[in-house]
Image (cartoon, rainbow, N blue to C red; front, top):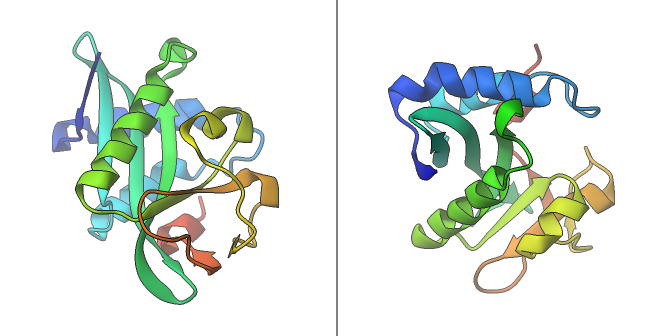
Length: 166
């Protein structure tokens, strides 16, 4: 398996994988593919990686800047993270997360936030932090990972693309 930056030729596969990965997700509004498209169209998809298996896109991860306490503090939001159903439970999601966090370090990102399952993301060092708030998710599902410096304080705002409706 190979992890690499997305290319224009991957856009359709990324959309299909994202739709399929979130199809039966209990907390999804089925807009994840629209979020990625909007971030890309607005030039705000800071990092976008695909996992390629046997020449086919098997997974995708996206990162975009977030605002904390009404300021850009060089922190990023992770997501959506998608793995094609055929390839799930094979470690591809974990490899995408690790590669994405490494890419964030390379661009001097200071940290990352996400909304997700603590049982999955705690293995990467993510945890709920009381100094960071996000009103659109349960506290235990909103997690952060500080990559450098100190943990900021304040309300986190994801890119406006996350408010897109179907």
